Image (cartoon, rainbow, N blue to C red; front, side, top):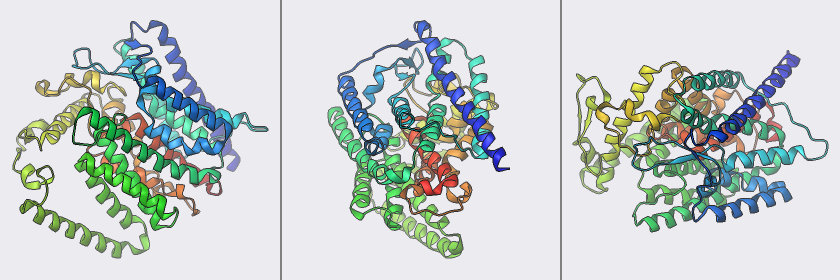
Length: 494
């Protein structure tokens, strides 16, 4: 039975490598026809070359010492200046008649950095490519992703559609690259560097957002690399991860509280309601499920905690102790519900004000996404194509003609991958890393064993934000997933 499992893993390793090479090969094939597929080259800005210099400097350090590779791993994934990706061939992801035209790279610096890590290991003496270990859900997911990819290629309207699909294969590419990378290294040697990389990332994001907000002249803290909501939500998820590490004494208090403090500054200064809710609900949920032997006691504590917070919030809101943006009275008075209507944006009618504008927009996005799901239930409209086709599914053309997303990861996955694959992908990324689902039998003292907290927190943020479709956040969540898989099969290497 064990030999059969090893044989299956070898076959799947060959399969995923071939799949990855086919995707990169498809990109190369389409490049000569760039003028037909809305591809541009070298869309350089003022920060492109400085970011390239920084990236090359990090790569040189990584080649010199592997500790540096992992020290900057999370930083390159999550916080590295986005202008470096302008160096790569990029495809238009907005519709032709949208107000601003936005392009997304076919490959990114994350591809290059992960490939570098794999090559560095393979170039060491007596090293060879290790067979990747796959769980059953992961095997099913990878098979379904291949079928969906082929279906989307054949359903493409034109070469532009094909190029959008190739660019948005970052879900597949990052998953495969992380599976291979994590399998090659004994990460126990680098766990401190990886944890500290979170602090570096948050610090850089805070500084970058402060500069970006100052240039824009806005009072809210806005990152230039990550969208406003995603920026705050991922900070909340990392803050919760650090809370768990400090609680279990897996990290020094200086490192842990520094990261938590920076994350809280980001959450508060960005004025993102969803991030605050994510932080609170995810904390209570993880506390509730952390010890199944004390589930009754923990449930009572959680209920009491939510009750006290709710009462405090209601009193503060009724007495105008909190800003209007966070007041339930200001929001609830502007919402009318009529179940006799058929479309979501008519069932939930939101009057536009400065405080309710984001809620009203979300309802319109949800409605368009639901229409996509109803009309394309099996394989979806194709990953990455939501922006191009959003107004075709928008009732009365209510969605603004600018770069947007679904603002809900579950709807995003189902509308672009189909219902079955979308739900499977959501469960694998957000919930499978949680220890009871991953069936991790052996406990480890590694701080990396708690990375599931980030995925779980983002599962709550996913209800009002499509963070998984920001390639930086997607890469981080897939990294955490691959760590969980390694934890299941090789706990001693973490």
